[in-house]
Image (cartoon, rainbow, N blue to C red):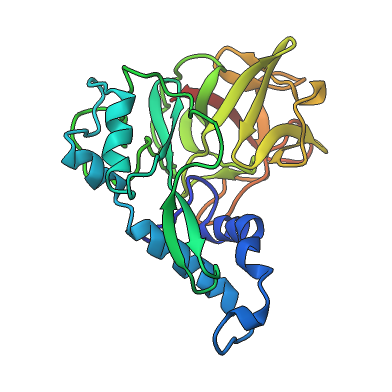
Length: 296
């Protein structure tokens, strides 16, 4: 798990809890008799072990590299070549390739199960939907993890979000609030971490990738957790938030704005694994910060 199934944002524990809660129902609803010599909660370890085991049989990076398709900030590829390289190694079945703009962002492999999902055989299958993934037929980018250079040794098909740091020079803001980007936390003239998927401030984890989309007189923000809003005076991103007008943000240059300007507040700078809440009003919160957009 620590090697093959880590989150882009939040902590591993939070991410795995989410995966179990959302996808574990594939096995948590099985009758105990589906297992051999069932032990209570056995389905939990089965779910995670099976997922990791399947992933290890799908070396996407290697399969693409074997076909001469390697990460690059300058080269582009034909979508058909990418799909052919992967399909060849997936029983000849089609593989879903999803793009953000023209860059490969994700790859889905589909399976049917021969027998029970508890102990059956996973057989390669074609995608069960008509989603084309949004990739162009040509000029497809397969970016390195660091967003630049050529070659690479990673096993993912999308650039990895930047890691947070406990301190450092002020990052150079890039772009406007449109498309995908990070929200860097800047306090005292230095970057100190960033905002993770839940809307919290984190200094030692991985930055969340947010999607900014035009809405009304501003834009909405969405992370992997859901749409973002200021709820009860606190920045929050969750699945129960909607994209209605109450969740429309504005910008002050490259800084995320609120009703009182571009200053946000926290009780203190979080450290270690602590996640700090971010507030739109000063109140009794002793730390002031700005949330600066960095396009990716």
